[in-house]
Length: 138
Image (cartoon, rainbow, N blue to C red; front, side, top):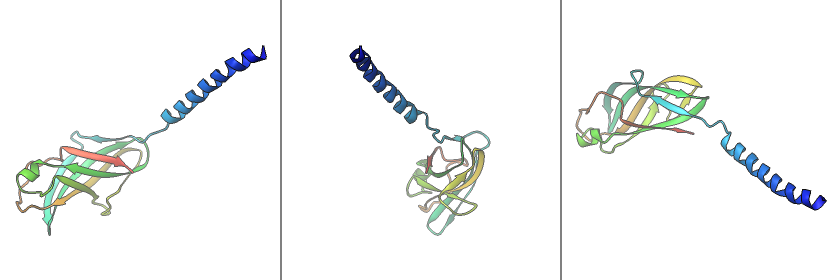
């Protein structure tokens, strides 16, 4: 009788352990960050300084908890017309000059200076936020 209970008990314990591990792996409160690409996010202006281009934008970002993020963008259109040498743009927080943005839980309005290498043509393809923006949680 004890052997049957023991034999049935070990697989049951293994199943319970696997379920517990799965719940601990999937039940984490992962940070979620969402860019609101509606009328709350907007292009402000662009300018050059030395060999850099700065595209100023206001982004409305939602976070489910307080977190720090980096923001980058890809802009191939402004490479084609000669404003940018490379499509890679790095986001800089206009308020403190940092490349890390500190978000609170809920809605955040941040002013981003997207920095890129100036290619020599002072013309922007469209007065709008970059089409491809990536927000990475640190």
